Amino acid sequence: MAVTVLKDPKKVTRMLKAATQVFANDGYQRAKTDQIAIKAQVSKGLIFHYYGSKAGLYLAVVKAAMTTITANVSQQALAVPPDLVTLVVQSTQAKAAFGQQYPNEFAVMMQAYGDAKKLPGPIQNQLMTMYQQAVQGLRQQFDQVLDQMSLRPDVDRELVLNLVVGVYNQLFAEFQAEQSQHTGMKTMSDADWIVARARAYMEILQSGFVKSLT
Image (tube, rainbow, N blue to C red):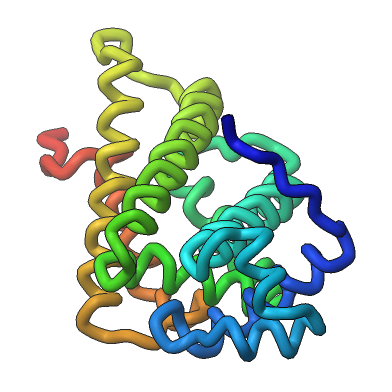
């Protein structure tokens, strides 16, 4: 039976804040728990008591950052976009605003998924699970957008959803490939290319790529 560790909320807040800053600045590999402990004004032993390992702390930081960005972006998306292209634009604007307000959390997210292959295997597995859960949430969002669009009657809605999710996964793969070759992407401005690519993909998906004969 797993033993539940009682945690001091104030110390947890300080630890996560300090760890987010250190991981954002130094990345997972170069980050030192000693430095995090000093910034958080706690003992290094307490960090390991609460999170088990540096990897456990890192995952807690990523989860906290993901929760923050999801809540922040959701608050800004008051109305369901009328189409997929508008969704990309609005989502980008919301994420850019989040990046300005929470630069460390945003940097951690960019690094975690952009440099995932450089992380230890167990962390990669956990990140992939978190990514798949996020995609399920996105699928629901895509479904709401499709409600606003006039689909052809001969088109299977479920196949459209699968295609949109497939495009999203393709973008994610391209982002990871680019990040592995050019490290240092920490803000939305560093990823302007992927935003433009996402918009282009969605425009092609909505409009098709065959020239109209009429």
